Length: 491
Figure 1 (cartoon, rainbow, N blue to C red):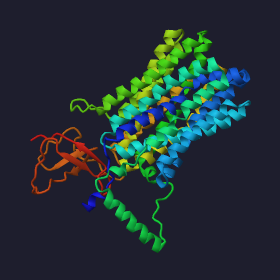
Figure 2: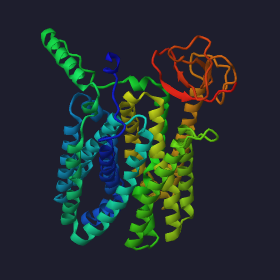
Figure 3: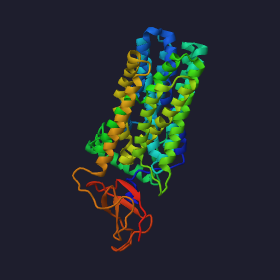
Figure 4: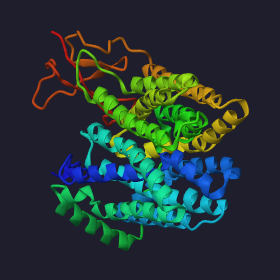
């Protein structure tokens, strides 16, 4: 049918599972590497001296923030150019940046090679993997993201051990040469990316229409390329509030990955204990992704946990874990903190992404999520060093009061998102209930508003909904369906 040609086709499997495995590996090699900087920080001080301790913290925060800052630019570039070539170029750039870091003899050279060049390559690889997942999965996206996001925790485990053992055994230069062999993996993984349009059932008709359109375009000279930056996701108020909430929480969200090793070393623990604590942090991150993912995908009519409440619970739990670190003294105390922080941190990474996926159409999710990451870049760049400055001036753990306050502030802003979604601007409050619909009229209740049910083909106007009837909720004045809710009707 002609109507299906314009629709994006999601294979929901097939080669998509290969893409899912590639995305897991990419998250392990990119986000996992950057979040393992707490172990690499010790090696940087050994190579360049203790006098560069404050600069070394800025180095880690710069590399992490740079990847988030470039996300909208990379998404916009991939809309016009090849996603596969971008991923391949990112893997090559990351490997070269790691190689240049091994030959650096001064601190400013490390800032350029590791903080800019390598961070650019890792960001290219990470963002393109998310774009490829969006091409293959829509209905199974929540399940796939559990696997993909848990790759970050696996990367923390792998690179924490690699930085500690390989660099300590081979030295700074040869050790980073070995890490370069791992950082070049995204170059080969990007080769596996295949466009989902290859599996469209009407691919030949689509190619024919593209060729005809290209001939007409050559004659008229009119270009129909989309704008480089698409600002449409920023017009959504829930997306803006989610960005603001994520930005506030990001001021202290990643502080333990960078400062926990300093606190542990100040307690007199050896290097093996430092490594084991970081390994516990990575395992807890993976467990958090799985727990929050199970709570989200579990379809139980008696107990349904909203994505927004999962994010809210994760932010509050992270803030409480920052307060509890004041009581951590020995090895087991820091292991307990690693689990108290790692589980909600992994859950927040997963649930926040799925919250944005729920608030906007799947076609625009990649652009909306890129803006959410961009909003976190500046807080990450500033928040991690500020936490270190407070620890040095007021006490070894005083900076975590600042990170806890930022987490609670992010949770408070997320509550505003819940209030505005229940009472949309310019619309009156509805009369229905969001649990069930007891009336006999063909309507259902969604977000305290009443919406009409789309009758099945061939049904009369007096059609009454059966059990588990699909209710298409039309948001605002849009003509397209924003989301689908399945309700159970009585009567």
